[in-house]
Length: 317
Ligand code: SF4
Image: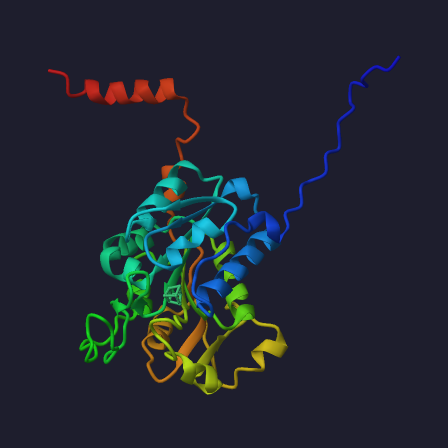
């Protein structure tokens, strides 16, 4: 006869998640679209960090890149144009146990979603926010976007756009309580991975602008950058985004940039002669609204109701 020993515990092995555990539906982006590279890198990050898929959520707005949650085998919310951030903030407030990622395009974030973008930076809730910047509205077939550079020929500006493109980096850096701003490119998976890793580990709102190729509507836009590595400025610092030597060697054009220096970050962010990649700014000590907001998360509903009633009773006449 077998009896259970009082201290006997089943030693269940921790699950190990592999790439397939994060791979959702087959991506329907155009061949050569930079979004494919970002998707593969994000899936690698999830695998390396061993994020439980049921504890991970991707939130997006509308646009080509916003199809991202469909291609992840995690929770996802494919929302409304420009509204990814308020949804993500709500998730973060009530479910601090989840790993929250946000995917936005340039039309999504920098046009209709601008107010949400600015205020969510200030709220500094922990999440990884990826701005896929391809300088064009792709899903709606090639209209000028806020970040399109002057002279962009598009269906809305067949003779070329007139205004200079909006630069999302100084805007983000200029918002009160900003805590993490970085830039990477879709064609350097090692740098993108290191950037995502740093963003994931950051205790706050981690904003990454990913310069993304759209070979369909913005063909050849970054050809010069790809052909001439000296057009890229690698922001190098031991507190920044560090690369293995064999990758870092590719970048002859480097600048020592201390990411605690906000003024220097703004100066680099506004450069137009080169494209800086790396960590512009990080401050881990900035106030986080999700910490404050989650303070009463475990309060039982009866207690919350009693507190609410007490407040309302103050206005009884
Ligand atoms: Fe990618 Fe551009 Fe095709 Fe959209 S239109 S899927 S951004 S290549």
